[in-house]
Image: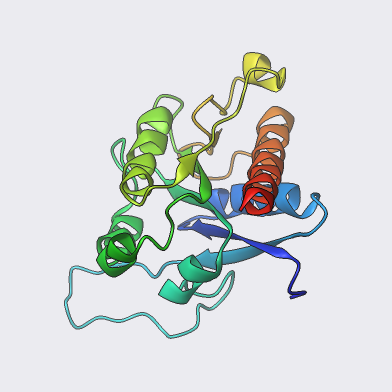
Length: 203
């Protein structure tokens, strides 16, 4: 990566591919901003069996996140499917291990946004987005949403809110992302990158 390029971390957990697809659209929005690169990363699943481990490299998709990714990023997009109105345990597990970065202020002052997908229409999209904001607030990040200047926010019937990008994936996880939800995800990524550039320039 060019030393002048800003690195925006897109960190997600996805079981059936819907959250991963939103992450890719957000990355598309990030990279539409000159001077910004999207760094896609994921987290391993957690298991009730304490000795079970995931392979060091995922079979497909983004590499696993490392704490160095937090230090090197200029902004963060965080995504997880909903689990009873909350972020998935795998993502929560990762954030539970970031106390050292919290103490050192690694993420303080950096911009962030959140995104999610749900199996049912009212399955907790907004509460999941809010749940992901909590650790980011403790880390001192500058939280961004989607403003109503984007007309899709008033038109969408499958996802998208002022709190972040979202998608109703259907009970089988196969419902395609609507054009409105896609546009909102791209717009959110673009807004994150533009804000990161402004904050970087002000330092």
